[in-house]
Length: 157
Ligand SMILES: Nc1ncnc2c1ncn2[C@@H]1O[C@H](COP(=O)(O)OP(=O)(O)OP(=O)(O)O)[C@@H](O)[C@H]1O
Ligand SMILES: [Mg+2]
Image 1 (cartoon, rainbow, N blue to C red):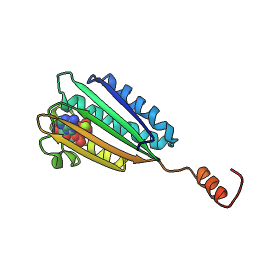
Image 2 (cartoon, helix red, strand yellow):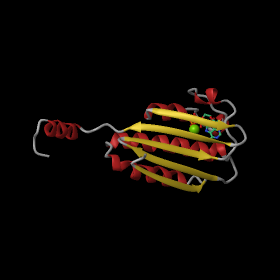
Image 3 (tube, rainbow, N blue to C red):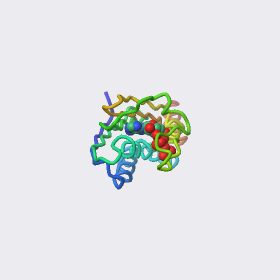
Image 4 (tube, protein in one colour):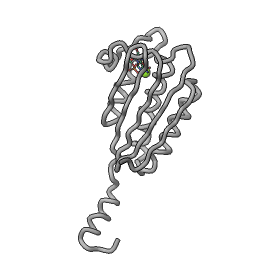
């Protein structure tokens, strides 16, 4: 069903944010993304993982899980915690909405995820945890398209 799949599990320490972002970027690089597409994925993963650490588990330590899948030229990334959950998902998605203004959060995490990825799904149960599912289609490079066209015309390769 999927062309490739990976799973990652780590403690909700802020030092693991970079670990998660770099690991998913390494996996995503199989789709041959541009530097910009890779940067978008890294930023979105970073926002979602930071949310699990800061909001999901707050001062406690918990486990964050990431599943990533490749389906044709789309990457699907699932990031979940079993922390406190989101009380009002519709409100949480809104730009500038934050429940931690005192910690200098700007309430832009979900807005950033939505602008850098093609699709962002928030699945949360207050008191049980949160799962974010994000998808991004990696565009085919011009060179590859040209090669396909050439092959279609009966050319070599
Ligand atoms: N994993 C999570 N667990 C519990 N609550 C969450 C989680 N992720 C987000 N939230 C809630 O949704 C709100 C909005 O999240 P968003 O990432 O957009 O903003 P923020 O984290 O508050 O600020 P910023 O991301 O700009 O630092 C958060 O303030 C928090 O209340
Ligand atoms: Mg955030």
